Length: 191
Image (tube, rainbow, N blue to C red):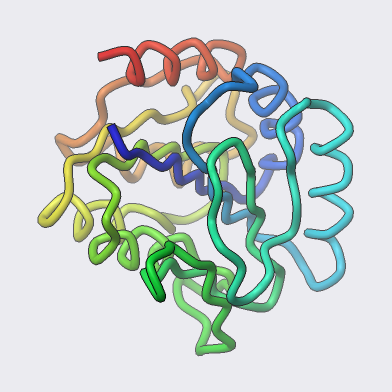
């Protein structure tokens, strides 16, 4: 199956990602997109740190690059990350648009852009963070695509706003301890 994993996180996200990313199997056979709310200059450092913790390639996303399996792309601070299918490939699109949910990058844009992708299934993961970024995007994505949603539990979230917001919908498959999310992803991918 043609899948992609799309992760949204904010406050407490870097620490959560340092636990989640090393637990992912190096043979994911799908790409991973991450929108982490951070100021300019910090997403490149985060990508380098995560890259040192796993044998999966982790990098700051670049506009126009082809999205490849077994590669983790982190949205560049100050730009919205979207996915577009161009010239036979899914590609990263970085847009300098208005703030949404008070942030840029905003996960809602990432999720909504996947509505027009050629991925058969999107595994949406919402980790610790303030506010409700991700909820509206996942609700809209669900209207057009097959999705599975995993959220970080309250006990391991620094702030449970973002996971708590999507939990209020009926779209969540699993609420999980941060240390168990990697296993939950594996289970979903085996279904």
